[in-house]
Amino acid sequence: MKRPVPTFLTVLAITLISFAACGTTPGEPATATLRLAPSSSSFTTATGWDVVLDEAVLVAGSAYFYAPSGDTMASLERSLRESLGVPVAHAHGGHDPFGSRPVRLEWLGPTSLDLLGADTIDIGAMDGSVGASVEVTLAFEPLSGALLEASSPAHGHHAWVAGTATRTVEGSTETIEFAGGFDFASGGTENLVEAIPAPAAVAADGTWTLHVALARWLDQARFERLPEGPNAARTITPSTQVGLAWDLGLRDPTDYELTYEARLAP
Amino acid sequence: MSNESQKFGSVVLATSACIAGCGGESTGTVVVEVSGEEAPVVGYPAGDIAFIDGWSIDFDHIFVAVEGFYLAEGDRSQTLEADNTVIDLTDGDQELWMFAGVPAQRWSDVEYVITEPTATSRRVGTVTEADVTAMATAGVSFRMIGTATHPTHGDYDFDVAIPMSVHASECVSGRDGTDGIVVPVNGTHQTQITLHLDHLFFDSARAEEPNLRFEAWAAVAGDDDLITYADLASQNLADLVGIDGMPLVDDEGAPIAYEPPASGLPMQNLQAFLLAEAFTIGHFEGEGHCDYHDHDAH
Image (cartoon, rainbow over the protein chains, first blue to last red):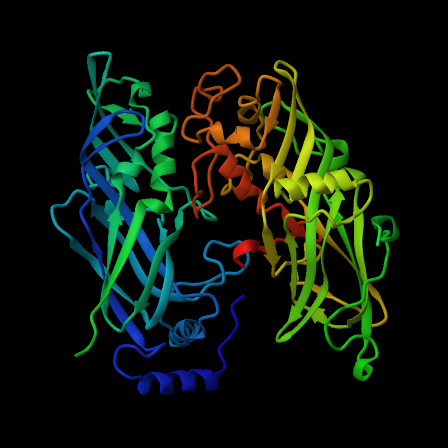
């Protein structure tokens, strides 16, 4: 439950932050850069298919890095910023999406991420406070504007894959071209991937790098069950086994790894 | 002390400081009962809760081991009961404890634990020593035994024992939506741990209104048509199989999906899904939700 911050606490927070030492004082403002590492486009699934992806795109909406429960400095910082009218990630009680948890850092998108890029790239800036982080929630808000266009990198979806799957059974080689989009529903926790481990001592400045295990997205896919269509590439839809396997895979928190490197002041 | 002497309505005094008469503080009584609502007694369908795939359920036993009832308000707390008690929900609503001398005030944080019993755990109602010993030996806090019936597929027996250890906290009352309980001065607050068994058969941990399904359970029954907790591990959520051994699909041929929680599952199978759902069966005073944590890690 959200409680109003008394004025004296606001003044205290400002005082504390003003006198904070450089870089490591809990509650001191922190910034970070969120980066994306490239993923491997080739892998073999548990179902026996060798997959080569030509396209893999994820449209991320926001990311919330949580402090440990009871971290009052993270809460104080958030409450201070709220009292100053600065929009912040919000916490709600009980079984609501984000729970009553203090937020260490937040990144707000949305941004279309090409997971097959050649190099690690910057996604964007994050702000928050110095202190421990424990885990991350990725949120996928409803798309709008150019991201909804079929011409967008994710073809108007939250995620998009295209490629080929090949297997050899009893000496006979079968190759299936595939393509398709994935969309998160809205409401409750439908559009969240929670509990992504992110243990770190967040300093005043640093970088977080996101690694996406694309191989796990389609690890349980049975491409042989994708129905043929009018196009060369068979379409992945929610009503196919491949679509279901992808849904389960893409939502699995263990598909995502976040690593942190602090940039400490000299 | 034999279990026969620990009857319904026995009074257990609060064990922490400042009980009745301490400094003249006003006190009241808290009575705690456990309910599975009507489903343990009448089975499913129960009211408007029914299986979407045409199954019905009759329960022979639903054993649950409840341990502890705790109250907290700010920096003040009360441990009202700490020992493990096993009940059978098919006996109907059961009163577990009556606590006199509880400080009369609001206690915003109500907590309780569901965790495995020991062989000497207290028993209520028709629970036998053998029932408790079986649970303690297997390390399970929940065990349901019964029969599922389908007009086409026939009868399948189940004996599903779940090794969950759950700490429920910050429970909200389903009666009035407030946090915890209010103990009245010289009065009694009748409170209830409400177990929602339908959660065990849900096909989604995320949907607002999930369906109840059973065929994926029946499909992994052994040759004796008995379904156990271990059997459920063979159902891959990405490729569920029906009783006929073919992919489990709906009327339009789309695969049936069990939707895991946003926090994921340790394994993508029906056993892991059931364990995650079992974590959420404990409610408070009807529809009130709690926060659920792994008790072993709490």
